[in-house]
Length: 333
Image 1 (cartoon, rainbow, N blue to C red):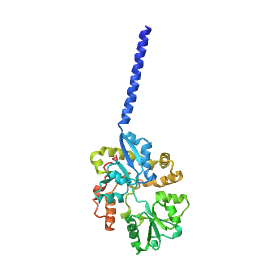
Image 2: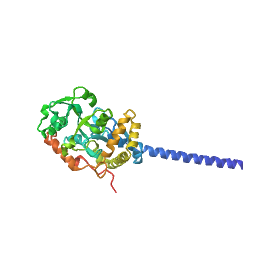
Image 3: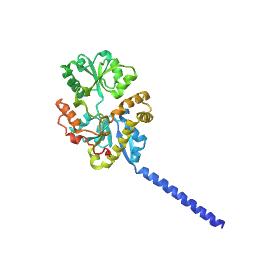
Image 4: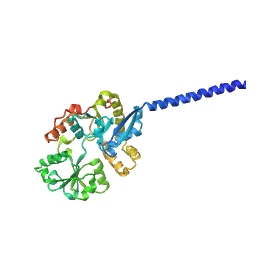
């Protein structure tokens, strides 16, 4: 009788062990079946990217069956890596996608991170630059792109001035605050980061937003990109990725403080005070007046492309309808 009981007990233990191993194997198998994708940022992590880190932290990618690696751009930059298929997704801007498309580079924007252009020309108040006409005789610090002089000139022409009267220097890797302490009078910044940082440093700035001078300069920056091959062959992957990212940015819109915590935890080298202040300023601007986060309007793409073409920044006109798509955004119920 004892032998029978021991045998039954032994068999029971074997059964339990087998079930446990089977469950572990199933979980491991499910984990191994997650699709691996890479997201390449355009710059060091900042509050433009918060929704991506939230999607990672809150398990939205995992729920979608994705294993997402968030990486920094190398020397080649996010656009080249994504266009060549070395990464599935990247962060770019409408300007860069427009240039790429007119050069037959198969980059496509699949979501707008921020609805309106938050950039402009910033200068310390003691420089007395309160309008584009005040650029005359001043030194502009930039990064050497042709679009810079074109934008400056278009703003100055509205006030009867010309970019020819501006001293343009290349700042290289010098940051805005170092540059204005040296020999630069004004520079092109995104207020949500450098502008907020100036506030925290008690530096008073005059800020001339591009959108105050031309609706054609109210373009999408940044945007999330993929390539045409992904759209043709892996549309479901894009849909899952953008669905998860959309949840991440909606979380950041609704919970700026908690979203800031997530970004700080993910990237502890960031200035905590700057992240919190920037997130509070930027969260309402992710969606702004759009009907949902991420959506893009063909008129915005056409307006800016027309402006670029008329200012000799493009060799060909843009097929705006092919440059972006809203098809992978979650459908509003």
